[in-house]
Length: 219
Image (tube, rainbow, N blue to C red):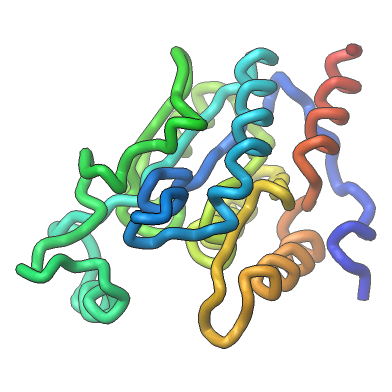
């Protein structure tokens, strides 16, 4: 079976109908003192920052999600697991509250005028958010997706985007995981990249994305 870099492209990126979605690149994941520190996400900040700057300059809309928790969301199973995962405080309150230190976009990706930053309380960026409404208003058909964590929020969002008929581009050098469930971060990345390319969209490097957009722009 073909690997993720071997599949033919099922669509071309057209800048006028494309948006960049940066998933959960907040201090709770990117900084060593964050409750869910993901070292790969910190390493990828320069790549994502460069891609974001490129999209800002090209007039490509940028959307940025923030993983947050609220006691009014989720069922008992979610909170039971998150207690085990260390996402509750000692007094039983929740970490990743909106506005908390861990819910701030990493300074390397500071939003600029025109960027849309929104909280999400589940793994998919589409669930209980206005993302789809915003995309429809801008007539977006293609989503360039980067961020963290590969096999949690990124995968959930990519699958839902596919099922909502969006063209999906996963940025291979801008998507991060961590060692867990008996697998390394790189194991998770490779497996998910292969799966996405086979079924859900394209897997490209940030430079490949930029090159295709430049070509489509006639520059």
